[in-house]
Each structure stands twice: as structure tokens, then as C-alpha cells.
Length: 337
Image (cartoon, rainbow, N blue to C red; front, side):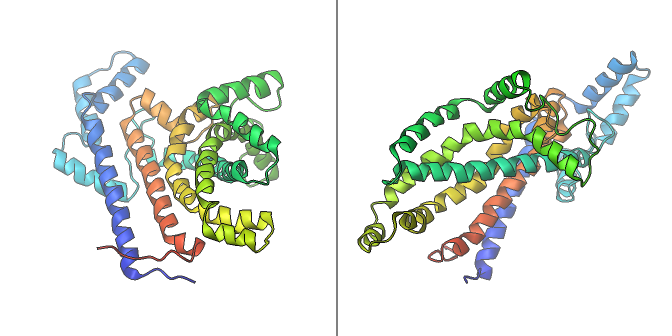
């Protein structure tokens, strides 16, 4: 089995570090280009809830001090980097004084569950359908039905979610309209809670699956067209090997590698696509948290969620890059100068 050279591993780790460092820096810079003052937003919420606020100037100064806005920009940046390393993203301005890390910790498991389920289903179904579109032994009905089904891929996820809600929740009442689990179910490691989570998560996952499987199907179709003309496929046919064996062992196995890279890159894009889906289903994930933070101009939450999404994407690419040789022994890890 292939082993990973130390020099290559260090090179990949350095790339991972630089990617996350540059992304974290941009996340810190961009909100500061806005003229909006988080302390003033916080003071405005206090005034909206309690009416006129006495000694508003002193309270505003105290809020600015609590958020570290009185420090020089360089000091703010260094504090931000240290807090980011320790996953301390500060306090939410919309739900003050709740730590941002606590909000992310509550939302992240729901998003990971929905994302992993949707991504795995679309990856396998999309690649399989893309391979069947090219395979010469596929029934004609399959070749016609698959392109017809790909019409759904042109629909935005939010519209597919609304359509599914109208059909299966409002009309047929097979699934609940909103929420991540039933109100009468106690959260915990129990069968009732697991069934409730799967029941509530089916429509959000399906709304993502039906609009994203075409990405994998079209990509796999193009790769399969290239692979089916290779000499090793022709030789396998000349040997009289079974068509299904050739499809799996020679065609899909060699065409799947670029799709695995896309699988890692799709993590961040899928979370971005889940934002509105989670919002319309009131699904308590990172997408809904980010959407609400944007509406509330809650910059610490926006920064924290954005950093976690970027970190997840970078780690996915890093892991896939390391396991490539274990998927295809022809690939070797080398450090290019």
C-alpha cells in the first residue's frame, strides 16, 4: 500500500495553512469595509426593546470596548487570528451575550447530517446515471429517462424546496412543513428522536438532491465518453469480459477520480446552497444561522460561520488529496519544485 512521503505531507499542510490563513484574513477585512458599527447596531436593538436608553454614549463606549473596536486595527487583527485558532469567534450581537462558537456548535451537526446525506446520495446516483447514459448496454428507456429527469437540475434549490413542501407537506401531508424534529420528541440518543429527525430532514435533503445530481451525471458522462475509447477498454472487450465487469472495473473506476476531487470542492458550495433551503424549512443548521445573521447584520456570526465553511472545504480537499493513491495505485505523491 502506498505511503505518504514526509516532504509531500508538509507541502500539503503548508498549502492548507496558507489557504485557511488567507481566507481568515479576508473574512476579517471585508466586514471592516462596511460603514456599519456593530456597537451602534447593538445599542439600537437595546433602544428598540426598552425604549429610550439613558446615557447612550457611555453604553456605546462600553460596547465598543467589549467588542474590541477601540483597539488599533493591527491589534484587532492579531486578537482575531488568535481567537480564530482557538475557535473563539466572540459574542453574537443579535443574541448578545451568546458566544458565536455556541451557536455554531448547535447548528453544525444538523448541517453536517443534511450535507453528508445529500452529497453522498447525489454523488453515487449522479455518477451511476452518468455512466449509464454512455454505457452501450443500457436500456433505451434509461437513456431517455435520465436526460428528462435532469430538467429538475435547472431549478434553484429554494424553488424545489417550495415545490416539495406544497406537494408532500401541504397537500399530501406525508412530511412536516418545517423544523428539524418533532416538538413532542425529546432530543437524545433514542429511536423516536432518530425517526423524527429523518422524517423532518427528508424533504430538505430531497430538495437538494434533485437539483444537484445532474452536476455529477453530466460530469461523469463526459468522462465516460473519454474512457470508453481507451485501449484497455477495447482489450477488455476483446478478452470477452462481462459488460458489467468492464463498466465497473475499467470504465467507472478510471473515470471517477476527477469526480472525487469535485466531491471535496462541492462541500463549501453545497453549504452555500443549503442556506435558503434550511431557511424555508426552518431547519436549524448553519445555513439558517448564516441567513439570520445577515439579516441581523451580526458580523461575528457571519465571520464564524464563513470561517468554518472554508475550513471544512479546505480540509476536504486536503484529505482527498492524501487518499488519492489508495484509490488509484497508479498515482504517486510527489513534491514538484
